[in-house]
Length: 151
Image (tube, rainbow, N blue to C red):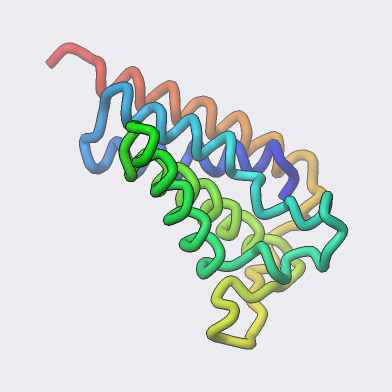
């Protein structure tokens, strides 16, 4: 997926999870927005010019970075959960998005050795990426509207 697709997929997943759990408020919205901003973090490997989807695309690294950032947000008084869930959600939704593409990778590294791919579409498919972006924006707006609707 390209960045637009990752942003949209993150908004879809985080909004649906927050809605399903009845979570609302500034803190939850901060996590949704921060995780969306961080949803392209695993693609730092492209900028660093290291093997794409090898070292930065796995749950193990996502958890390590999430714990580290959670600790930092705790130390500065923003709470562990803000940093942890923002990073972990952003990186995890990125992995989910990349799993849908043709190019396989190992999201379970370093535990497993197998590459996974659902082979649903090319990561460069503009229509798919734009659809995810629009669907994500709509899902987030619906989440905000439904949780703030008068009962």
